[in-house]
Image (cartoon, helix red, strand yellow):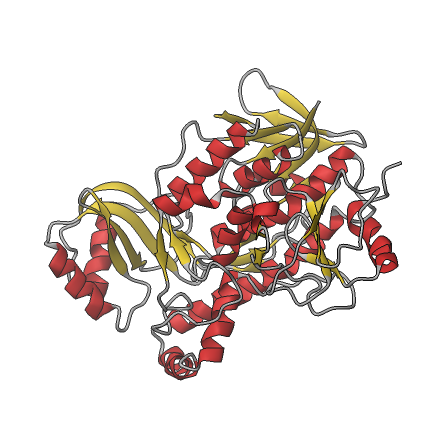
Length: 477
């Protein structure tokens, strides 16, 4: 029997496959499409996702293929500066096309031993006390059996629908067209028109992608009845003329699509042996570029917990903590993306609020607060009372003998001990004990989960021993 089947081979599913394989879990990824999509849906990685890659030793693969940005405008296009003194060693946004992110994650998952099966569409799911049966499309009616199934199959998730999990929220009020095509005017003309139009219409832009192809974003005339039906080039031309006064001579489209501003959140992230992650669990407008990042961080939270369940050492409630921790994070993203959409509106009231927000974000503290929210570095999970570090992820920091994140590549827990008097005897198969010091750590010792969040801080050995079973199960005999 397969340990875990992942439905969906996008960034969330691939990241989850990588995390599970670090712990030896037998993983099969089922992807409906026969070939990777060439459509660039997301354009970058935020700070917390960059940290996640660094924690797993993957960042050096991404950095040469991306571009680091320290500019303003990530929150609703407001502010013209990147905030100073963010609590991170990676204070930038990494501009990198989703197609590259997908490829790099797929390569890593395959290296680790995950099996990626393309052209396999899930059409049926049933479960019992022992496992999950996954039915695939096709005349043969193939059925696979696994201990767990994770639906990472997007906003129109088949897995979520088959489970009957509610997906409440707000429907789209506006649609936006997005496509890749060539233009028939000089690049200087495009830049001049775009700069002028974006003074009042922020949901508009043309950006060069290379080889004469532009990424074109323009408000649609109305909300589509069926968003699965792509728009035509004539619709793009009509809307470009309506918004910009010119259609730029667009021609030779590669890909045409549309997206709305609906916000929906799954009522629960788990139904028995089936879980949801990424867009299957939440959808929201792409404002602020948070969607792909939110999915990667879902996978990072879930991976080690599901692996612990498979391995048999997970304490009671550990797997359920995935939903209790990530559901509120997604709800907050839905709120801030909806707020950003209001700030992008051209209605008089929204324009007035935008002017006020433009003044407020000029204050460094306000700018920093919004970027910290957008980049997810202030996420704090409820892990109990105590030190102010509890529940927060620990930033990368210099140790006497290296870097903190360099110690986390294997996805294990970590006791960073500046006292040299502590021990994780009985949990050494799950936790690395590192005796080292850092001028940046204001605690005698900290216990980190595999996802880098602090679950204990102090120097009392009895207190540590009392906390270990909550996150790492019973001590080994």
